[in-house]
Image (cartoon, rainbow, N blue to C red; front, side, top):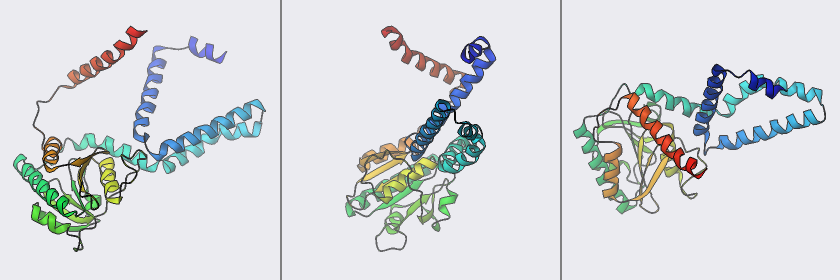
Length: 288
C-alpha cells in the first residue's frame, strides 16, 4: 500500500530530488572505492539490515525503537569512522577553487626541472639509491614540506644525487619541489596509501608513500627503488612502474609540462559527455 501511494504521488520535483540524492551517493562511492571504508560500510549495512529483519519478524519493539533512534548516533559515528575518506573528498572538491590560482613555474623552468629529475633518476637507478621526488602542482603541500628539512634551493641533478646519497641525513624521506620550481624541503614525511588495491603487495614504504601523496593531492611523485633500482611514477593514486629515463621524461612532460590547449566552453564539454554516454548505451539497446 505504501509503495502504491508513493508511486501515485510521484511528482516531477520528487523525481528530480530522488535523482540528485542518487547522484550524491553514486559520487560518494568513487571516493571510498578500493579503500578500507568499503569493508566498514559493508559491515554496517549487513548489521543494520539483519537487525531490521529480526525486529520485524519477531516484533521486537525495543530493538525497533533503537533502530529508529540510531540516526543520531550514526550522524556522529560516520564522520569519525570515515574521516580519511571524507578529508580526501573535501580536498578534491577544494581543488576546483585552487585551479583559479595557477602557481605553476614558467615553461622553460619546468622543462629544466624535468631534465634534472630524469638525469638524477637515471644515476640513482644505476647506483640503486632509493629516492622519492614530489612535484607540487595545484594542491598545496606545505603540510608535508613542514615535516622535512627546508632547503629552498634550485633544482639540479647534483643536489638530488647528494640528497639521496645513502650516507647523508636527508636520504630517508621525500624531496618536495614546490610550485615555484625550487626544492622546498628534503627528508619530508609523506602519508602512506590507504588503498587495498595495490599494484603489488610487496611494495615497500617508499612506494606506498608515493601512492599516498598522489591520493591526497594532485602532486606527481617519482620513486626509485632501493632494492631493484627501478623507476616508477605516481599520479592520481595510480602507479606507472618500470620506467626507463626516456619514458620517464615523456610522462613528466605530459603531466608536469603539458602542451597548452585551447580552453573548451562548459556547454561543449557537457555535450561531449552526453554524446559519450549515448554511445555507450547504444550497443546495450541494440542487444535488447
